[in-house]
Length: 328
Image 1 (tube, one colour):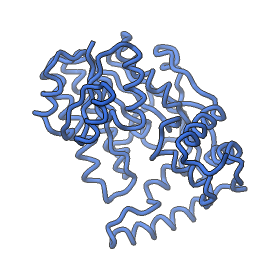
Image 2: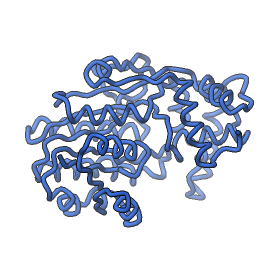
Image 3: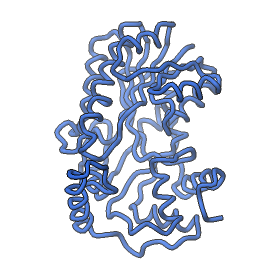
Image 4: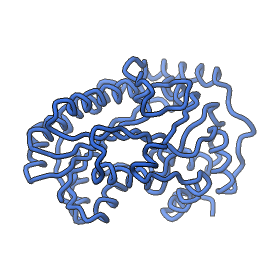
């Protein structure tokens, strides 16, 4: 069966491509650049180039019968300077991809959302927790929630089956730009400290397999939270530092200090129009205590939680194999 993946060159998208090919699917990818398409074609993947909101290019990519569309592409920037771009990608892009899928007869639409669609709530998130992200001052939370509303509307129209997946913090091998930056800062001795919040850490390989299961299994119309081991960010930093043989901070940084520093950098960025190293949005997210119940995904998608120590070790092994770490 043929499937199409948006965001195929990203961290999760790359793992999803591998999982789908292992499943025997005929995989096509929809990407933004000709260079990315060329690399994918060299690896034996059918590839199409276009913007996410380009309906004509999307319909061309879906002109061959397509059983499933995996919409993984998203803009995760925590900076307000990218808000317009982010809204265009996360909201307008999702609207266009859904329209193209409905118009060309795609059977199932698997949408990669985020726990951010729920906003920051003082509870353990379940699929039944109200999604409050649409009212958030953080554009990423707001756009992910609005995109989910578009997917729900498509499901109600009845022309396509939809499944929504909400991953938590995704870690694992092949990461160069996300949590990998934390690993590199610790390795280089440049991490000033850990934020005071906590997270739920999901294995990218298991998240990819959950996407495949969301296509293959009779779960149309459902959503699934994909969490992992819960830990304070300070503990995550200590596990990484211990794995690398580096020194870890003794305690978390005060939230008030992080907020003040981020506000100062944000004011400077408003003048320079350059993305700052820390934003008020990023501080809000890393001072939050994210807790996720993955029971439904474990029960219906065979989703598995990887222990944090093993997930960190696997990530360090990959970074070391790529020559990205100084520690041996």
